[in-house]
Image (cartoon, rainbow over all chains, first blue to last red; front, side, top):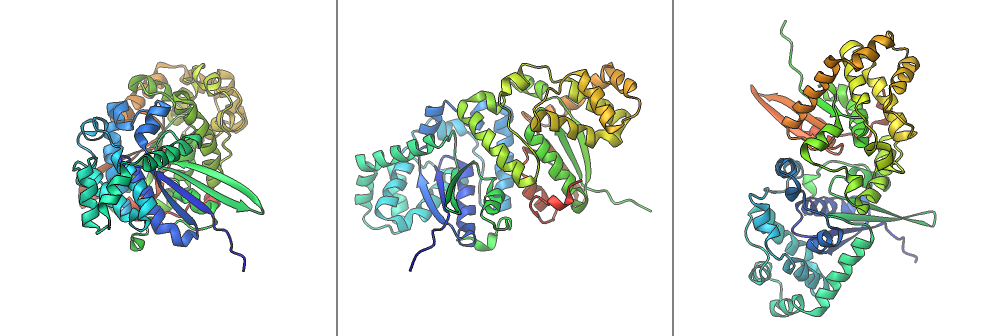
Length: 227
Length: 227
């Protein structure tokens, strides 16, 4: 029996990127209907900004900072995601090293992949809904306890290991090579009559086009498909 | 007989902004179905960039320039708009004064509003589909002749008058006051139980959310509604 290869959709994301949360939830809701293979790949947004000399929207000019606060509320309400804009983006995100979350999520993907979705969501709830500190190792232990992830000590060790660090670097370099300058970054690989095509999308607002490329309808936020 | 006030949707646009073209066509296709009053307002993107110290995406970093070339093709194909990315954005747009098109469109809106849609589209075809020069007064005469706009001499005079110039400045300042830092800029004013609400949207990818706020479905590109 030959297996039919599904189109591969990769989502590169980081907890520090609120629109990554939107892409994450919307792709999970559409995954079955689009009949795709969805791969979730934690990367480091700090490293992407450094490598491309890009600057977060909130830090570019007051107009953008102000606009994106309101836009996040509208986008969150549309998708039914409890996004709350940051009151002090610089204090919460820029002044802190935010490498622990993607390192931990890389370790989870490596050693306990069945917890990746829930662990990512716990992080976003802290970082972009309740606006609690989320970058320390204490959050890792808290998330492990809350989700009953076994072997939390092992996971913490893996998080701090060269393996997780190298894998995170590798994946971040992979998305940089694809042309990324921000997150979320989505790639769609599809095969049409033996020809492989790769499309890249920045942001969370290209789902109607992605659906269209896959020959499917876009049905809006699909709140009933929440997982 | 009392008239029921329709929600007012304003589109602030300039020919130099390719995503403005997408917003323009998509809103025209959705206008009737959304049961809105649509107002098309030419403004100057050059002035917006200067006032906010914003920089066009294509000039910020090679990664963005490269990404937006591909994105324009995908977005254009999705909406059925013959967008072609610029081969040399700096040469075509940044090195030229692009004030004539919004001044002329302001004059058209003032004196021959029934030609505003077609005249805007002729400009976009030159600037973002065929990539011909579009900023000179010769283009104004060419568009008048092609569309059989009467009194082309008067229109050319109005284009160069203080009236059109001041009105353009006024509208550009209006959108700056609304928080704009780029184009297209869309505002939606709706009345819910006597309370007036205004929402602002930057870009051409918020139509599903706009439909949702108006209690309507988003039906994709609606190519059959081309006008």
